[in-house]
Amino acid sequence: MRLRPFSLALASPLETARGSIDRREGFLVAVDPGADGESVPAPGLGEATPLPGWTESRSACEAALRGAEDENDGKALATDALDRLDPTETPAARHGLALALADATARDAGQSLAERLAENENLPAPTETVPVNATIGDVDSEDTVAAAENAVEKGFDCLKVKVGARGLDADIERLRAVRRAVGGDVSLRADANGAWDRETAREAVERLAPLDLAYLEQPLPADDLDGAAALRTVGSGVDTDTDRDPPVPIALDESLATRGLDAVLDADAADAVVLKPMALGGPDRALAAARRAREAGVEPVVTTTIDAVVARTAAVHVAAAIPDVSPCGLATGSLLDTDLAPDPCPISDGAVTVPTDPGLAGDAFDDLL
Image (cartoon, rainbow, N blue to C red; front, side, top):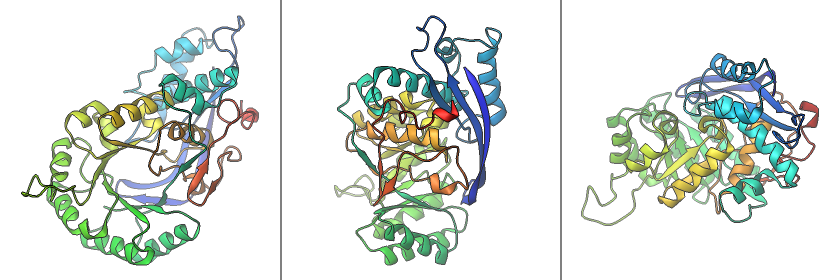
């Protein structure tokens, strides 16, 4: 197992209710075949790009990976090292090594990573393309509309708008302006990143109802599952004597990192869950979570943590393995000023093409190994 640190600037800071993101720093994780040819069947590449708030810190990620290396004087078997990485404590570190091993195994089998993941979860053959949403940062109303119109012109029919960094009135106006600009045929999501209290979130749900949102993502702090469950009843027939779906479905993201999927499902707190493979500890764990959510009647959506190209490609494979997946947050490569390698997953007309070569993308990343 070998590590290579990297640091990538964003083209411009992404403003969210939790603060500005202007740089992504992490590690490439490479694994090589053992001397006996059994511990790892082929070379493989992974990426560990922590994002505090969703994962461990960069220093904790590095310590976990270096610790795994040091178990055998820097020559730890990657398969043994994976067992020592706790996905709840250091998910980004586990993601990096789990992805490297999955890439190696899929390459050895002559399968794409999506095929291998689907086979392991007894799912149908993966899709060739995955629908994606465009992400719009928390900027003023005029810039929000301009970004939305630009995304629609590029073929996106699903937009996610960051909210929560300003007053509710301003956010409502931003979303209304977007809906007026793009019309009713474009799916619209809003992501508050846990910025609101219960009173504000309930008011938001009531006022956003006419805008026909696909969902409102993480309106409350991550730990408040009871509050999220209560939001799902607003206007749904639980508060009234009618029998109709809630006007604004609720999606949870950060809650999965802090409370876990099982707690979210047990609390009946979400209509959709946003699955970040980096925050869940690997592509294998992300797909298993998607399957559990779907079985519980909750829609899974796959997104990145604004990762570099290796982890983004892995997230595309995870999404491709989910049957009939909703638009996913995978169109994030353009947010980076530079990247580690050319992107093997082109985006066109609101969809990303899934690589079909063995592993992540055949030999596309071999120069990084």
